Length: 171
Image (cartoon, rainbow, N blue to C red; front, side, top):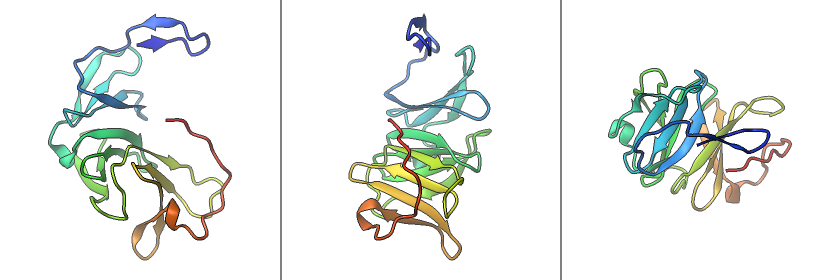
């Protein structure tokens, strides 16, 4: 369904497809709309202006997704998908849908049932970039370290969080 951004008036149906638990919606850098289909464990792509179906960019079975819920495009341009039932965040090539490995591997860092995530721009941060994942039990912060790649600290474990201005995001 499409609504007028200024008035809230109903404009009509934007895209139609038989999706099973469509959770995450995200416009990509290419202008297309990406929709995470939870029960089918896939990501569907729609033309961003007309709503016409384009393709299944991430087919079921790709990247071992199990009840994917959220999706976001990272600073590297790749598509990151939160896989709820196996507690991981998978990474995909947005042009081909090819699995590029896990950003957060299952069982690592105490991430349980990830739902939604975002990458915070580097501007104003002492470290860059920063990824934030929201799971059943906590909000986790991820940032790059020279020695080991990406490092995780859950909010309950932070002793001295990085300094930044608060930003409000609704999900």
